[in-house]
Image (cartoon, rainbow, N blue to C red; front, top):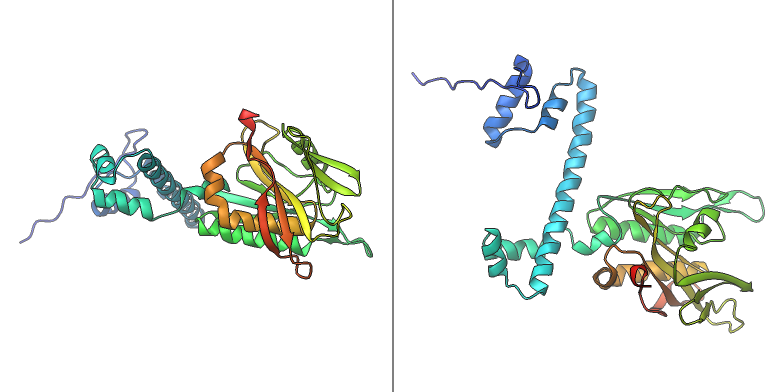
Length: 316
């Protein structure tokens, strides 16, 4: 007659006290299938008596765990990429880490790309401004801002980032003291953003008379849109940067054109060159002026270029 497996007696990792028989059976099953001790967080969730609260807590924890796994995979890939760029072979990295060369090579070329951290980690929130309709005064969103936000959302999801969207309300009040913000808004529509732009040590928003413009304080050059400078060119300029949060506990990404075509141009630049941008500035505060040639009929960008250096604010 086969011997019955002796059931494990589970105790709390925090108090050492025996757990309820029902919870002990759950933990026993998990331990036998996983071959290791479950976490105290699992114990906490499994001990919830209300089934709906348990379902909600388990779902939220699973989402957090999946997000953490994604970010750890991104960090691991970035580390291998950096070590390889410094001259180490995959075999050398594997030997030092106790992994095979093949496993290191696999990690380097699979999983979420490190440059996704240019937008944020875990979850990003893309914010676009509401504007007041001229005729009826209703709140509306510029179609170019909607398009740019949709393209940023697609880009973020391609890096396995969770995405939420929201609007800067009429009046421009926005909470910038949050992680993972990508703000598509200029100083005209938000006093909060106007104050945030003033923290840029190199680039300045100016209103010389006909429209807004960007000035490079280091060189004195003023960058104006072709829609405002009298040339009539289908060319816009835009701001792209990462600025400190008002609470000093991080930074947020921001971009906006002097006119809507410039906003679309920055979205296109990020989609094509985010790896290069990440390689040069990482997650540090920076700013740059972007030039955008666009189709006058569709406002879609046909050419984008950096008109200033990528100014790292810690070096300004």
